[in-house]
Image (cartoon, rainbow, N blue to C red; front, top):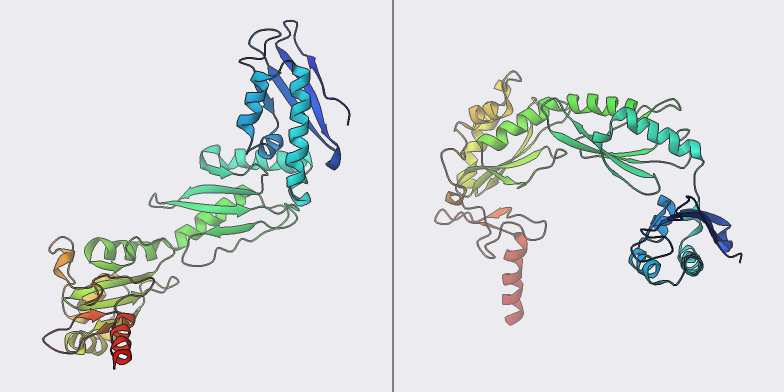
Length: 342
């Protein structure tokens, strides 16, 4: 293996530049060492390419310490070359493949057009980046882009937390800015859905989910004590009559379900979902403005928890003196235990 050579780049001999060769993969890494005082390594700093930083990610502290402690630059360069050989040997060949300069320059230029303020993450290989895009109401959404090595001939993979799958119309000439414009249009198409859900979240007690994501179009709402209503909105037609499931003891929810079914034909898409629901069930849903969530029993009467893993209390006692909701699993376990004790 040829010894690395670092040569002074200025008259004061405080800046040294050179290349380190890794024989097993025929790789070459550029490095630059800055000295505070000529000939003194204490306080020196190392600059290198992002690819080399990525390789040394788990041993950068060791490298910096050895730079300070080495007797000479030549000794440090040889030691650093050996460390690189070891680190490269740990990598799979696919991770060591660098793209041509045009790949990186195109991406950097496209990010510049999109705006660096929108870039919230990019990995060291330029294979994954995350962009933040605001919708019409200022909500922030994250678009994750997984870039193919054949970019732009092959479309990247796109991931976003939306009610429907985000489909990009991709051509070889498509740029990241084109993608952002398509994503912004997609966000606009969901505004009415989010407006309907925002009104529900603000004016009714939502049992589940506790912290809904932008992709979630389901809400479980408190109807009254031991009674709830699960509503699933259609993302494509958010003002249409939603799928509704009444949950609770029959003697409690029966009247609400009967009222809803008898008035379903009166559903008015011009009104909001919450307005229609309240009109059809015949009561104003309990609201955070007028009630406390603790006033309504939603926890399991056996384990005293609402969620048991992913399960929620979906079985209710039909005794009019009770009406308590239960997890099916909690009901099953005591019965099993009792049978085993016989």
